[in-house]
Image (cartoon, rainbow, N blue to C red; front, side):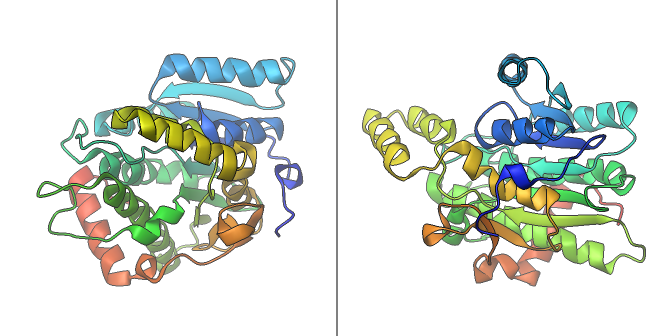
Length: 316
């Protein structure tokens, strides 16, 4: 599996793929790869102008001849109303969603809150995607899927290993560390992805849906530069730029674990990661996240909190 690239993806003609954060970085490269293989890609993005420019760039790079279609739609994961409106729009216009890539995220930013009052990293990276997945579950259940099964692919990070779940202060109201908050949000992604698969397995009917987690390794994207810019520290910008140049792999390679999870024969509950140096570089392989990410009590508690916080119930 460590020599797998996007060129090995099966054709996905007629499939519908939703990618959050599709206008840049991993989401952009994933969108381009899905569209090249024939999928209709719904680009779920917060900034519509940037998303339209990204779609135009993908079309231009393909000489105007993209095998699939690009459907740019607004979805701000920091707003539960925006998530609901996006999902309602898809239900009105599509019969099924074959793949949902929960990819968008923010990293190590100063403390702020979402429209609904959640700490932003936890609110965007986890709660926004939790709500989106629950609202799109009927369309996923209605899909034929890729290789016969619909996929929910949730993007985590190696930073989950630094995350700790503190259910007495999930929104960091007592104290805040931006990197600790990022780690917690990425741990929450994994707890959610694995618990979703457990609940799918426990369902009375064969839902035809799998939940798979992945992480991109250290990838050179604008996520690091946004983190540096929001820090207000010019030295961080220099450091991030140097680290990306020395350590970072290209975004098209970093997107491969997500693409593999979305299209290859991967078991539900799997964790797809780079197979190279320290699992931070290279082509995708099946790995294992840290022990905390497999905690069933934490996963169940997080699920209950997320359901109450978002008001979204999963029809399982």
